[in-house]
Image 1 (cartoon, rainbow over the protein chains, first blue to last red):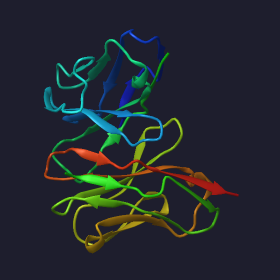
Image 2 (cartoon, rainbow over the protein chains, first blue to last red; image 1 turned 180 degrees about the vertical axis):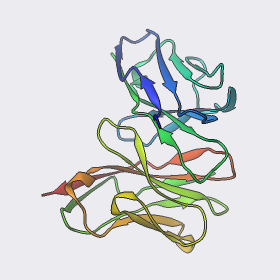
Image 3 (cartoon, each protein chain N blue to C red; image 1 turned 90 degrees about the vertical axis):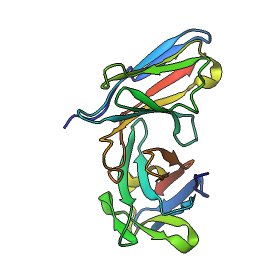
Image 4 (cartoon, rainbow over the protein chains, first blue to last red; image 1 turned 120 degrees about the vertical axis):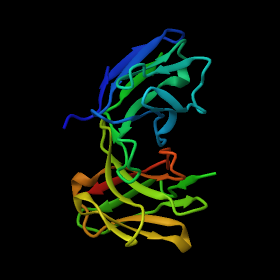
Length: 115
Length: 113
């Protein structure tokens, strides 16, 4: 079974530029999550999708961050414009959605550096 | 509000020694509890989970954890640490059927040869 795929793995941009990350969850997984993990901290949930609908985006800085999952499969997370404090690893995770006990499956993450 | 606390930011143990990583949670009912491990440059991997039943759960790589309701704790243990266990460990809680997971700040484990 293929795992959660993310690209790119690394990205370096200047502040005020825009950037996009892509995630392809495990096939059949209805729930998809984007997390931000700042160095030395635990993952912080940015947005949670159930199929192509948003379940929770309460911690997403909506003035600069956006995310979509148009067909209920893969997803993109965009930052525009980026700030220095956006430097972090962006993790994508997925779950089947019907079984709370399975836990989440994580991708390798995208490390973003904003200069 | 749900929360997870991992009191130890860094822990150093010698190879072959026993290990206990602490996790305390705050939640009104019995939550689903998880431990994840993150090796450098990698995503998080599930070590073990608790949702009901036996309060001592076994996981992968020889890890176990014990759920103690009275102490609101879910500590991770391993009887003999290997050098390859050096990584960062995260405790997480999910509750209320929201499929929403809250992570602790992590404990970084260093293993001395």
